[in-house]
Each structure stands twice: as structure tokens, then as C-alpha cells.
Image (cartoon, rainbow, N blue to C red; front, top):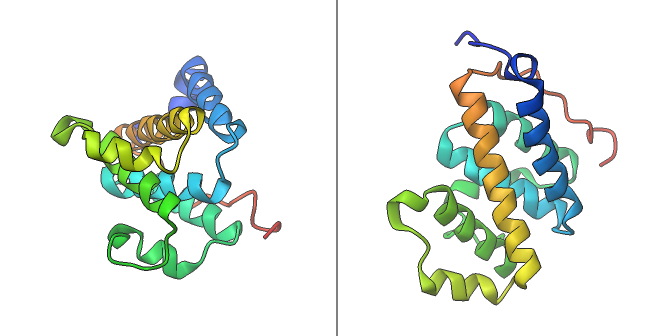
Length: 155
């Protein structure tokens, strides 16, 4: 597919606003590995090829296993995720698809067992951020496949 426009260039201020949110997510104290799982899972839900390419490359460069990335779409059946990761993935799905089922009290209580007040707000912001990036990349057909992780030589 042909890119429609470069949203970073078309509205640098809009891009900076998204980038500022992204930077806050990374300053939050949430584990980087958890953030990458959340970003990848939301991008699977939204069908964002650009973000899937980016975040699977970043996750791998930071030491994430291929097996966990391959099975992320079926995380409920795979034994490779911690209780905290499972709670974050369930929260990611609910918040990403909030118009479908909302967020149940049962899920909220489950997630609260793993995340304190600040961490839950930070996790929710991470989900909001990646959903925003997904929508920009999909709507404007960001070019897929050229992303190179800045973490590739650090892992």
C-alpha cells in the first residue's frame, strides 16, 4: 500500500503531542518489556502493520523471546506470561476495545492485584498512546518494513 501522507511532517505539533505522551509512558517506571508486550498486543488488535513491525523489533532487540511474541495473540493459552503481564494484556484488550464490552469490575479487580494506582494509570496511558499511534499509522498508511530498532545493539 502506498503511504497517504507523512503525518509527522504535515503537523509537527500533533506529532510532538503524541511523542510527549510516549515519553511519559517510558518515564513511568513500567517495565520496558511489559510496555512492548502492551504495544504489540494493541497493534495486533488494531491491525497496525507499521506498529507491529516496530514493536516486535524493539522487543526482540531488548531481549524478548520469539516464542512469547509469536504466541502473544493467544496469551491466555500460553504458559509463558507472568500474572502481571496477563493482567496488563487483559487490560490492554479491554481498553483498546472499550466500545465493545467496556471494562468489567471483575477485570478491574484482577488488574488491581498487579498494579497500584499510579501503575494502573500509567498502564492505561500506555494503551491510549499505542492506540493513538496505531490510528495515525493506519489512517495515513505509514510505510511498513523499514524500521530499525535503536535498541538492536544493546541487547
